[in-house]
Length: 498
Ligand SMILES: Nc1ncnc2c1ncn2[C@@H]1O[C@H](COP(=O)(O)OP(=O)(O)O)[C@@H](O)[C@H]1O
Ligand SMILES: O=C(CO)[C@@H](O)[C@H](O)COP(=O)(O)O
Image (tube, rainbow, N blue to C red; front, side, top):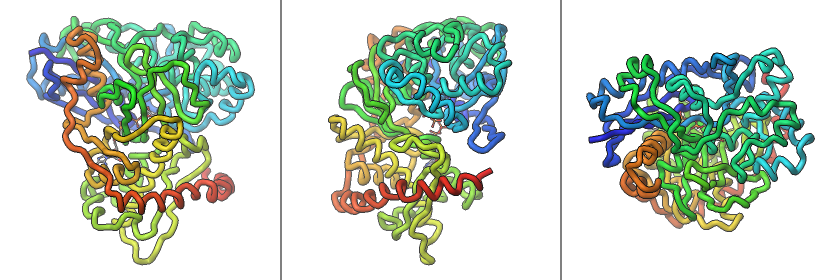
C-alpha cells in the first residue's frame, strides 16, 4: 500500500495526516507552538518553531503508524494564509513572522488604497485588509527599513517550512493571492503594485501550481523525520484552498464552512472575471485555474477558546459545551458578537470589539457558552448572505475545522444558515486537502475531483428545523444591529486597551 502525507501549518499547531491510496487516514499527529503578542494587536510566530515542530510531527507520524518510509510517496502542505516571513540570502528569517490576525497595519492599508485606488480591486481583486501580506511588508518598510534592505525574498508560512524541508523556494497561486501582490486572474506577480511601493519584484518567489512537484526531502531532514530523501514534495496551498479541496469544494454550487481559529464561508467559482468589489475575498483555488469567494470571521473558534480559557479553564471543549442543547435557541436573550480581535467580513474593522448583550441574573455558564456559539454562527451567516446576494444558491454546506466536532453546533449552523450541513467522516479539512494535492501530484488520480470521490466520505447531514430557522432569523436581525450600535463606543474604548 502507498501513502501520502498532508501537513497543515495551523495557527495553534502543525497537524499531519498519513493517508492511504484508498483515502483512509491511517495516522494523525499534532504538535503545537506558541503565538506571541508583544504589543496590543500584534500577532507573531517564530518560523523556526513551525519547521522544528513539522519535522517532529513527521517523525511521530512515522513512529506511530509503523508504515515503511519507502511506502510514503509524497508530501504536501496547507498553511495559515498571509503571514509575512522575510528571509535573507541564506534563507534565514530576519524577524518573527507577522501573522494573518495581526492588526497593526491600518495606516498601511489606507496608504495602499490611496496609492492604488481602483487598480487594487482590478488587479489583486481584494481590498486592503490588515491581515494581508502587502500591508505587513509596508509596515516593515516604514518601521524596520534595515530589515527590509537585507531581505532577499518574502515567503508565507508553509513556503518557509517547505524551503526548510527541500531547500527550494516557491509560492503557490492560492497563497500568493492573499498577499495583494498577485494579479489574481493573470496568475503573475503584479509589477504595477510592487513598483507603486518601491518593492523590488525580486522579493517575490517563483510561482507554482499547488500540485506541482517542488523537490524532494533534504537528506538530514529525511533522516530526522524518519522518511526517505526521495520522498516527493508538492507545493501545497493556502489553508482555506486546501480545506476546500479536503471538503470536496471542487465544482460550482459547492460551499464550505470552516471553524478553526478563524471562521470561513467559501464558495467555489470557475469564472476569473468575478469581482466582489472587496465585499468578499476572491482568491485562486488550489485546483488549477479555479477560484473561490470567501468571507472571514476573524475570531470564530478563537472566541470559543478565549471564552473557555478565561471562564472555564479546567474544562475540555466537550465538557464546556455539554448540556448547551438544553438551553433554548437564543440563549435566554443573551447575544454575543465575536469581534474580540476586530473583524473582517462584512465589517473590515480592526478596532471593533465583542460584546455580550442582554445579560440576566438567571443566565448560567451554559447560556454564555451557547451564546458564544450562536454569535460566531451569526457572523458566518453574514458571509452566507453575501454569497446568496451575489446570486449563488446555498442549499448545502460542508462543515470542517475543530468547530465541526460538536453536533449541537452543526445543527445550529443548519438552523442559522437554513441549509443542510454535511459532516465528513474525517474532518481533517486542510491537512486532508494537502494530502489530496500530494496524491494527485503523484499521479494517483487524473484530477482532484477523482481523488475527492475516493478520499472524501460524508458521515451525517444536519437539516434545518423550520421553527428554529424562524426563531434564529428574528435574532439575527438583532445581531446585525449590534455592530453599528457598538462601533462608536468601541472607538472610545480603544484608548483604554493599551
Ligand atoms: N470538541 C470541540 N467542540 C467544538 N469546538 C471545538 C472542539 N475542539 C476544538 N474546537 C474549536 O476548534 C478550534 C480549533 O480548530 P482547528 O481547526 O484545529 O484550528 P486551527 O487550524 O486554526 O489551529 C478551537 O479554537 C475551538 O474553538
Ligand atoms: O486569514 C485567513 C484567511 O484569509 C485565515 O483563515 C488564516 O488562513 C488562518 O486560518 P486558521 O488558523 O483559522 O485555519
